[in-house]
Image (cartoon, rainbow, N blue to C red):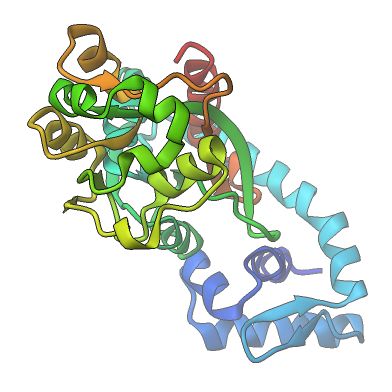
Length: 301
């Protein structure tokens, strides 16, 4: 059986789409379709159900993928080992939210440069955009708080960050700790706040976890919306209102007194980060190395 046909088949099986697999393989969509039809004719059985959006494997297709994919991945590892032995430089394309990528991911990966690799980073605030880029082959590795589903991706839990409700000392004094403890989120009614998106992802998560409620519909318009948590922190320090921030980002400002934590819940809300690659791509030595480095680094964060 032609290995090229099997490689294309496994790519389609993992991508769930002829078009997506074509982009990953560097082929045209008609070429991928033709190769799958050729393989189906050779086997005498259909391998995919054609749907309005992409394809799903038949039972025969699932069985073939289960048997073929590990061997193709092993061949890829052998090829990559040869490239590394020859001193070939590899570029790692990473993507994720700007603050987490800049303050955590890139510093952890920087030592790879000394091993002959190069790094390219894409800053994306939306999880959907980031994962679409990974699926299309624009990125090799992404970090996101969205847990992707389906066979296209392999996701590993990377790190749990603690979320903190913070404000400048002026607002903390005005609100007071007792009203917040007694009245809960109602004590914050009318107080301006800062967020990264109009959908209030961090405020809504904190409210659900700590106050067991949603933000009041009458007070759900942020005073400042900026898609970078570092900018949110600066606005809070300048007195723009309260915000929900990850502790790793704001601990220095808390320690110096530039901002104050509004309450300390017994069980602080957490947000999990995931390290995501395309299924099978950890056969690439440089990607596997970066993946392992990030997992080890996260244990010390």
